[in-house]
Image 1 (cartoon, one colour):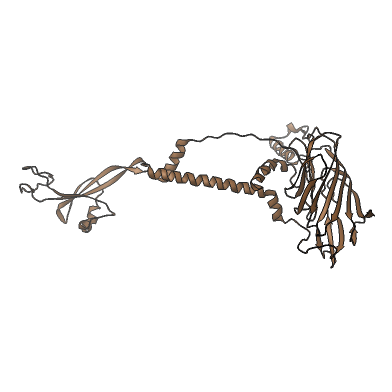
Image 2 (cartoon, one colour):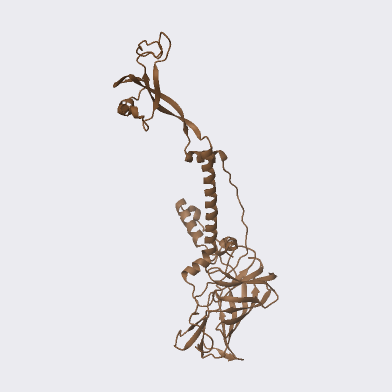
Length: 432
């Protein structure tokens, strides 16, 4: 993505506000900054030798000139695209390489960190080697012949003055495009203007080396590319989800235990209570008959109550089954005679009883009482980088890194690469 500075059009203030918003949005979405070249690759050389098992020993030499170390900072590391993920034995050959490693980020790359920063007009000369597999296919074009297909990493925003691929000529049947034969190597030489690619094909007889039909030219499927791009983030999301879920379950269990062990009464409710009272027809003390509505004998003071029992609708004693409808037919407060038994009455009263708090209300009250707080965070900047996209058979590109967050060379993700890079680096800590 090229960026260019956005300018305010003349006369814009005379346009209606609606059109100002539309035009401003359009400018924001389509803005491209014209930036001068940050780097130039003077020499990009790859020497390839096929091993007996069909793998290829590749030795890289690159002369990288820093054109601008002010806009994006000095160069401290670069990324070079390699054929595919079947890349092994990556090693530095020059002393100025502090660290070298294979990385995967929507493609296949080698990340090289230098032992110092390089500034404008300095040339970084560095060498490294690796062993590459899965870049050939048996019987690809003709039965009985095996073809190696290789596209070196390219750069969308860097000109390569000279690209030289030297492929050892032993047992080779043919090459494409045409190449000069020098000192036992087929030498392909070209330039790579920004964004251009260069593919070579080297053909062998099937019995030239120990080729395998199981090692066809590696092509990253969409699922593999998706996993390379988003896999680490998905793992982090899953880990976070598991942690959050675990915390939620622990809190739920703690709340449940708290609710079960607490009194749990936070309010009251009105309830109708029915009491069935049986009276003695005569005083059990002196035998005097019971006057209507009297509880105690007016002569000896004895109580006329024979039995008194609170009755619940869901649990009616056997002796009251036959009069259940009459007992529970009264809802207003008062005392009512049971018609089938002249000495039996139902007392109906409204009482206030404590109500147990529901578990949901208990949790809500706990959360409300504990309160909540939130805080803020910061962000950190990262070095910018660049890499061209990965070709199915053998490529991927590269770029430089300075000290800002802008990215002038990335083709797969462009500017979004380093907006997500910090998260990806964090994610890889969980999956490495």
